[in-house]
Image 1 (cartoon, one colour):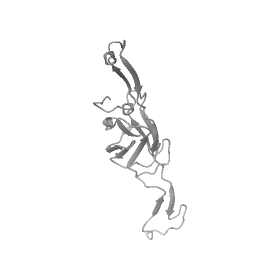
Image 2: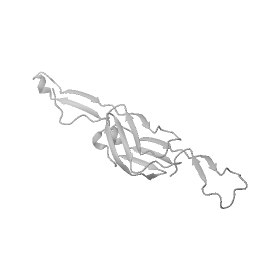
Image 3: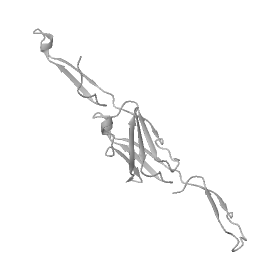
Length: 171
């Protein structure tokens, strides 16, 4: 039995070599074998990749994986959220049970495109590219106004408020 000094890392190739002498003087060569740990694959995201109608106001995103990430590398250097190409502040990163939760400093804005980038390093040295997903928040639609559009004869001085309703929160 060989006890490891550190746990195996995701997406990594390993080679084990035991000296031939362990097999006695007649053993001609070292014992040698290789194996690798799986590269974690992105199993799902919230919001979903490609979603174009995400409700604005959310502050938490998440990504789930089929295998563990390199938890030691889950930090703001390896997790980036972009809003229209500009970085968004991340308040907290929570990782456990093969799920990464990203808590943003501020809520998602209406009518805006977002991209989340998780550095390839999180998946180990065999991971070829960053994990990416894109989504956008819906553009609020005007659903009600008062007085109604096109109303003629609104009495000057009598109207104390105008009512405007949207189907989603505004920024």
